[in-house]
Length: 207
Length: 123
Image (cartoon, rainbow over all chains, first blue to last red; front, top):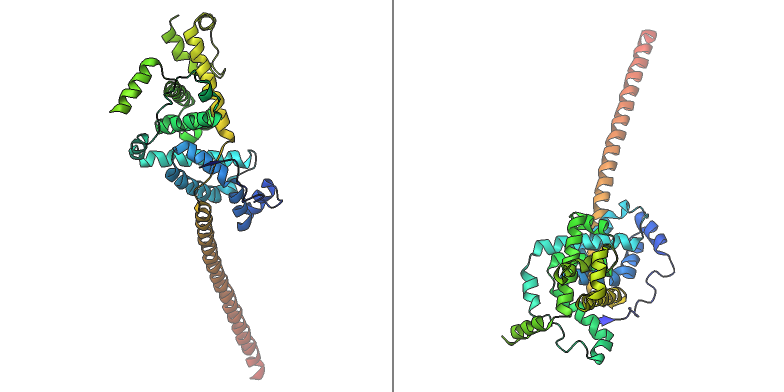
């Protein structure tokens, strides 16, 4: 699932800059838009995956995102980077998609998600294993309720400003902030459980 | 200040967005438990930042599906504009025909007039 880059598509832009391709695509050049899709789809997919926490929803969101981007391209003014613009559409599509599908898949999934690493946090080997750590955080993210996950992903991974997050999710900035803090708190509790919390998790596992 | 109160504030303070007041700062400086918690938040934030650079492979075939869907959309768009174009052509044709009819009508009138004009001469 996790790799570093996509070697098979060494240069999907084929020498053109993103700005050139955007200009051509806006003028109706279908092939230019396809190249933009090829160049950006892996990043957009990664965001969609982080936002939804699973492959199936991420794939649906990716489809929606590019269709919407294609239709809205004329309105893209180029004052933001193309990828930022695309990220905002992805955020909006994910939010709509998650709201529509409701909680059903989340509940189904949370049983598959591995619980926090129960090894003592002082184990130096466990702490040194950065990849394992990222996987644990990824799993903890996937286990969050949708409305909290979306905010923490956009803010703490993708560095979108509160204003943009609030706009794409259709909530106030204050609400976005409250959700962000709750998400961070839940993640910390899951990743660094206290002795009592760990005990509870172990008991939950044993059932 | 109690640890529970400080603990509620840490998720906002951890990235420096919310300013910690002096009371909170002095509590954290002397409280090992809250220091540990703040360190955990910092670590969480660091790993979250790392995730940004980590790419995830889309499932095989997804790119092809996305491109196919886009080319369908483009085709529908092209069809719509072709139909709109045809409609325009039809309307333009009508206008031309009307114009031609008008011109023909005018010619008939002129011809009639001409004939009319000639008739007195011929008579």
